[in-house]
Length: 171
Image 1: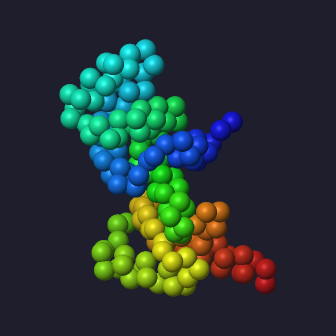
Image 2: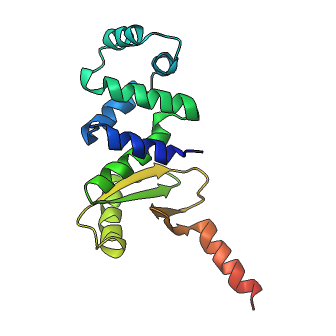
């Protein structure tokens, strides 16, 4: 079975998708009725294009919209769930590190910039550039979790308590 990441990676190999389209796609793909219309195989292509034109959708993203609408429909996901994969692949294409940071609550801009600088210098100094994607995860009690490819640095309260528990029971 093909994974979501593989499906998106294949799309990038055959398309001319550009990073400046991500925010525009996200804006359009939050309209659930529009996504259902685009993903519906029973609606003729000409009708879908008419719907997009009525919604004043930028002509430069129409082909990409069809792909992502179908992807959302097939996987039952909102574009927000797909966006990290898209940003990650775009970062890889430019040779940048794609870093996801999960926190319990949104981070203030000054703290965010400081975190980015620290994480970049400590963990990703091999890369000339890093693309950060900050996400809120209400399941995190406190602290934060950093993910890059298959590596996770877990600085959450839960992880620290678990480590303490493991040390305690091994005494």
